[in-house]
Image 1 (tube, rainbow over the protein chains, first blue to last red):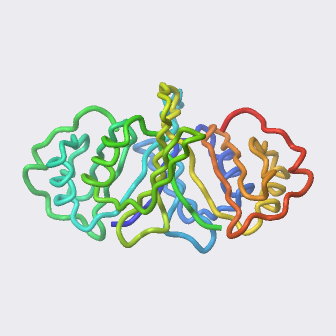
Image 2: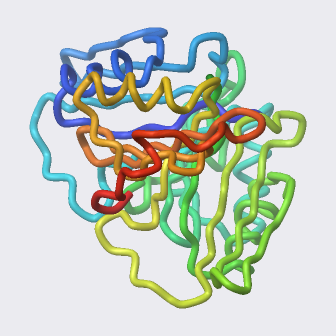
Length: 139
Length: 139
């Protein structure tokens, strides 16, 4: 298991790059835009320390960030996402976004901080009970 | 420069450890309580990946976390905190908490995400213009 990134939502890509890249000196590692999803993701990290990253999420359709919505989530890579979700459930944690795709899950801390879990390497084959498990709430 | 931690405020230490430690499987690396400051800090990380950490801040005097106040900040260690703050200023970034102690500074992103900067190793000798620079706003 290892720490992947901290995701924050941003309202202006130029201003954000002027801050995170130009002022703070982080390096842009990669960028990804989805026409269909209407969002842009930009991953940055300190030069020479590319393991822990900052993920900027820019949603093309403006959104008002109240209630801490501009803080996104903390993310970990795990060896077995099903085992991790089972473990979380056995501790009474609700799986808000079950790993139906064998790849990604979201849960929340007791204080509603979103935690993303990503399968290390290639996704696992889809499996029950996850395939049939609906989303619950937001994350 | 390297990524240090993501800080989140928590309202209940037991519930938070049940989630981050027992359910998610992070390891507690260290814990620090201040009678005077009336707070407890708990640092956790994925086993075997202790570089990027989660810092839980528990304030003994309850506080209502609206407006994203339960997300704290992202933190970086830097080689020269004065050079970094100068660089940020030259990019028009306000130094909310100047490094008067040669050790710590806080700024905010354009979306008001708090960014903590910590001098790597021992603090630098206190120096102007930082010594005389007051705090601005909150962070």
